[in-house]
Image (tube, rainbow, N blue to C red; front, side, top):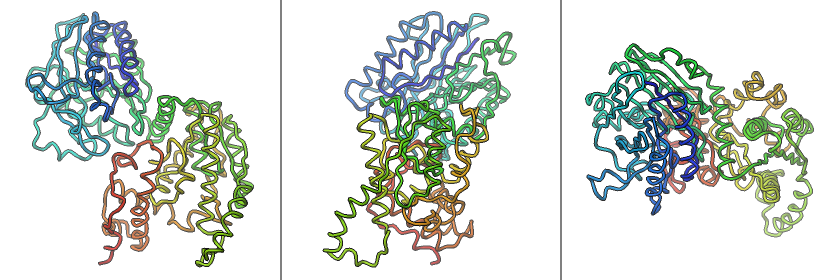
Length: 586
């Protein structure tokens, strides 16, 4: 039989638009001679639909959209469509299921409800869905051979938490894959909506290969494409042969349909390569994947929220430079405005670097100095500070109050220009800074999207160097980031001769602590024991992370690219008294 895997990029809740994307994919698969086309998990509503599932009428509207699609677009081809449905009719009152519906020749064939529902990290499927209770195998006619028995699974049914370190959740659960094999499946297909995380793709491929080899059966998977709020999906399509070897793979972050011939003698077949330009193993580097994920996440967030343009505060530093490069790659340099907002503490080379970056990218950049506004606020505030004795608290100027005021003036300037132009402010803070609260509420945290909030400072440098070394692969004629932005000591430039390392450990040390404490949930004692970092440094960083929780709860939505991001997957209380930093050395 000929199989088509069709990643699509749905917008959550746009049922008509998503059905139209699915219909176009079905037509392309039919034109390619496919017997079976598989669309991603919940492609009709987009993933994750969150509390839309609870909204009266939403699930019924999704089911109706899938029915219209299946009854109008599936002539001559078997089609698997992801959609939320009322749970199995044999269990009345059981709510909603995360389902697949199968249509052929514009007629309904069968359905399958997802068996394993992830509830960890960003997933909350137990809140919305009831698990399925049956293994489903559908018979798919083939133009060139006999019918093929195709087993259905959905995302977690394949991964069982192994891709994210939560396999223990399913130790007592039945194996959905083994059950469809026992029912006579000859091919397993697994539509997914699995968010991108650096490194997770390799784990997915290993899991698929293991299923194929264990059951001596071809296994095919297709993932959702695109950015939906904080999550980014890579649209990867994969087919593994019965021996566990990779037979075909589509490109990631692309959306190309993968078409393969599956026969008794193997996968491929005469002429299959002419129908699929992507019969190659996926071998892009982490740098390439991270660049593509961030660009797609920025592009889709702006597009799906109705924004055509973006504004970025350009300081001449590495974070704003990388943010601007990614945004220009996402929506085009003509749709990006850079604002240089120098103060008395801004170095001349910082402004020069900001304008050099803008010139390299073809981005418009304008200067709005904040010094007059700073002077105005000082003239308003200093008399009150003196009158109430607030200037005698031991601070030396410029103190933290003045530093934060500068940041807030810049944030207000960005938001004011955003209001006037309708462009979205993309913030520039990285994960390392946000982790320890090295950011200002209502200042540099102002904006609608935090593009680098899950990218550590070391990754910022690594990705920036990779972009400059591979400009054409990123869509640029020459290296876009000024070399000085990469090599100079990082600084907020809020006081004379300031550098980040005045108040923070070196970033290689800081990022190591943050990764272990935030992403690996390690205790401070373990961090000290395994890294031999100064206990006082570890304790201070851990305390900074904990006390900055209130800031992160007010930050712009950020794109998730690691196993634990600051967002819906990390839920820590703000008003709490647990102090793990105090336990070091006891």
